[in-house]
Amino acid sequence: MTLSDPSAQPVLECRALSKSFKGFYAVRDVSVAIADKSVHAVIGPNGAGKTTFFNLLTKFLTPSSGAIFYEGRDITRESPWSIPNMGIIRSFQISAVFPDLTVLENVRVSYQRSQGYDYQFWVSNRKLDDFDDRCMAFLKQVGLERDAMLHAGSLPYGRKRALEIATTLALSPRVMLLDEPTAGMGHESIGLVTELIQEARRDRTIVLVEHNLDVVKDLSDRITVMQRGQVLVEGSYDAVSNDPRVIEAYIGGDLMEDVGRV
Amino acid sequence: MILPEKSRATLYLYAALFLLGVLAPFVVYPMFVMKIYVYGLFAVAFNLLFGFAGLLSFGHGAFFGTAAYATGHAIKVWGLTPDVGILFGVLLGTGLAGVVGAFAIQRAGIYFAMITFALAEVVHFIAMKMPLTGGENGLTQVRRGMFLGVFDLSVPLVMYFVCFGIFILAFLFFLRIIHSPFGLALRAMKDGEDRAISLGYSPPRLKFQAFILSGMLAALAGSLKVVVFEFASLSDVHWMTSGHVILMTLLGGVGTYIGPVFGSLVVTFLEDYLSFLGQWVTIITGCIFIVCVIGFRRGVCGEINVLYDKLRRGRAARQGDPDTTRAEQAGE
Ligand SMILES: Nc1ncnc2c1ncn2[C@@H]1O[C@H](COP(=O)(O)OP(=O)(O)O)[C@@H](O)[C@H]1O
Ligand SMILES: [Mg+2]
Image 1 (tube, chains in turn blue, cyan):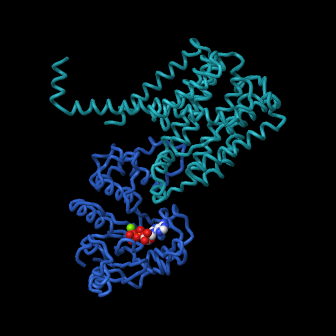
Image 2: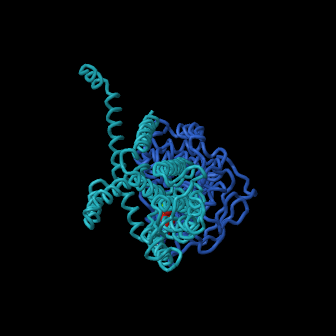
Image 3: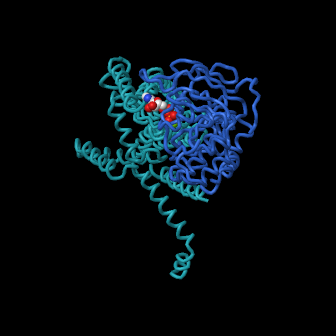
C-alpha cells in the first residue's frame, strides 16, 4: 500500500454532495476527498447510492446541492463529456462496450480521442493506421489481441469487462472510476482484473466500487462505507472492518449476501 | 486477415459499378440513370444521418427542395452558371440544415422526427406562398448552360458525365466521412451514447455535425436535380419526398454504403417503367416496402453483407478443418 500524504491537495473532492429523486435522497451530504495516486474504495449495500455517487462525480447526474472539485477547480457545472477530457474516466456497472464495433474499433475510438482526433470528418482513418499498433498493445495488455476483429457484442461477459478496461486505459486517464469491475465474474477473471488495477494504479488515482471485499482489501488505501446515501465510516481497511457501525450494518441484514466476512 | 479481403471485394464491386455507370448512357435513357444518381445521392445523405447517427429525419425534403429552388433561381433569374448555382443551392440548403438541426438534435427518437417534419412543413408552406418559387406551377425552364466554362450541359452525354462525376465525388466524400475519426465516433455514439460521453465525446456536437453534413449532401442532390431536370417544384419540398428517401434507404439497406443508391434504382425503375400502371405504382412500391420491412429488414445490400460474411466464415471454418480440406482436394 502506498501511503498518501494527507496534507496534499486531493485530486478529486466533493463537499456536501446530495442528490434527491423527487424527495428521495439517493446521495445525501457526502463529502469525500480522494488523495492523488491512491486507490479509494467505496463500499456499501445495494442501493446505498454508490452508482449515483459516481454519476454525480462524472456529471451524468446534476447534483441537487453540493460541489465537486478536481485539482482544486470547481467542476460542478461542467458537462459530462468535458469531464473525460480533464482526465477523469469512468466505467459502468453494467458492462458498456460498443457492441456493433469490433474489439479493435472499441479501443481505437477511445485512443484517437486521446490523440486529439474526434470530430474531424475530413481525415482518413488510413492516415492514422499506426493507431492500430498502439491499440493492439492495449488489447494485448488485457489478453484480447486475438479477438481484435470480432464484434465486441459477441464477446463473453468477462472479456467485455476486460475490453472496457482496455478502452479506459487507452485514454491514459489521471483518475479512473470503476463501478464494480469484477461483478458477475468467475474467480480467474477476478484475478485478472485485480492485476490490471494493480498495474493501472501505479501512476494514477483509482476510485473503486466493489462488492468483493478480498479485492478491496488487496487494493485499497482508503475506504468509504456508504449506507442509505450517506457516508457511514471512512478510513483504512483495518479501521473500517473493525468499526462497530460497519459490523452492525453488515450483520444487520441490511446487506447483500455475497459480501461474506468483513 | 479478414478486413483486407472484404475491402478487396468491395473495391471490385465499386470498379464494376463504375464501369456500368460509364456504359449505362449508351444502353439506357441517360435521364433515367441520372435520376437514379440524384435520388441515390439524396438517399446516401439521409442514410448518413439515419444509418450512422441513428437519427430519423422526416424533413430531408426541405434541404433537397430548398437547394433545388435556390440553384434554379440563381441560374434562371440571376443568369449564373450551373456550377455557381449549385454552390449557392448547397450553401443555402446547408444553412437551412444548420437551423433545423440546431432545434432537432435537442430531442431524440420520435420527437426528433416530429421536429424535422414540422420544420420541413414550414419550409413547404413558405415555398407555396413565395412568388419566386412559381407556386403550384414550379420553377420551370431552368436552362443548364456551361459547367465550369467547358462542359456544355445542353448536350445530353456531357450532362450525364458531369452528373456521374458529381455523384462519384459526393459518394467518395460520404465514404471519407464514414472512414474518419468522426465516422468512428458517430458509430460509437449510435451504439452507446453514455459510453461515448464517458470517453469525452459530445453527442450534441456529433449529431449536429452529422446533421449538417447530411443536409449538405441532400442539398447537393437537390441542386443536381434542378440542373438535370431543368425544373423545381413544390413536390421537391413536399413531405412525400422526405418519405420517398426513407423508403429508398430502407429498401437498399440502412447503414450500408451503396445500398441507398440501389434503393433509388429500384424505386426509380418502378416509377419510370411501370408508370403506365398509374396509381398502382404507389401500391406496388408500398407492397415492396412491406415485404422489405417484414422479410429482410437489413435491406437488399444489408442482407448481401450478412450473406457474404456467412459464406466467408463458412469457408474459413472449412479451411481451418484439415479433414474437410483433404476431402475437398480429393474431390478436385
Ligand atoms: N434515476 C433514479 N430515479 C429514482 N431513483 C433512483 C435513480 N437512480 C437511483 N435511484 C435510487 O437511488 C438509490 C441508490 O441507487 P444506486 O446509486 O444505484 O445504489 P448502489 O449503486 O449503491 O447499489 C436506490 O434506492 C435507487 O433505487
Ligand atoms: Mg451500483
